[in-house]
Amino acid sequence: MSSREQSPHATAPDRDRLTSLLRRIVDGDQQAFAMLYDELAPAVFGIVRNVLRDAAMSEEVTQEVFVDLWRQAKRYDPSKASPRTWACTIAHRKAVDRVRSEQARRRREDRDHQSSVMVAADTVTEVIERQETRGEVRAALASLSPAQREAVTLAYFEGRTYRDVATLLSIPEGTAKTRIRDGLQKLRTRMGREL
Image (cartoon, rainbow, N blue to C red):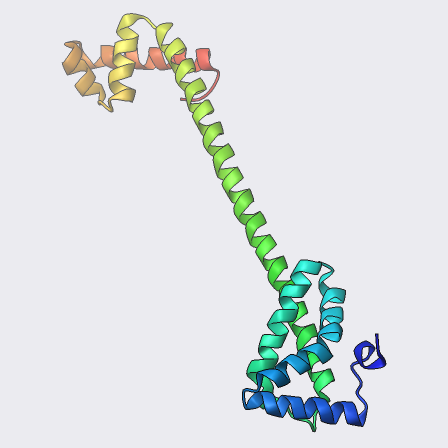
């Protein structure tokens, strides 16, 4: 590499030549752009590669830098920096932006992945728990006398009141309450938890 490729600091002739190329690029001179690319690509790529470490991504960002140089050539101000320094500054900013963008993308993907895995796991867990609970309830209901099972089923699974249960079964309300209460007590004992 020449000293021009290794350092963003420019000599006066180098600076003048590159400034001239940028002025020609403002006018749409593609040949001037090709010359600028040949001059600055190694330095730009080197800066980008130092930040990104990935060769393919570095090549992509280097191309983006040169698209920006083409588009922003009219913004170049020779009183602020040499063309080489200006290009290297744009390269560094673009590379850092890419790193930040990739980190944000990974965080989003990780967050999305975790939430989708959690939802799937929660859904499976809920289904299994519901199936286990249904099995426990069926077994517990089977342990009740037919009269208790009928009263509990009407009261708790169909949402009927004591009075409704008594009317539907043609029994006194007190008997309906007793069957429901006794049935629930057996269910609690059988299932080992509050109902």
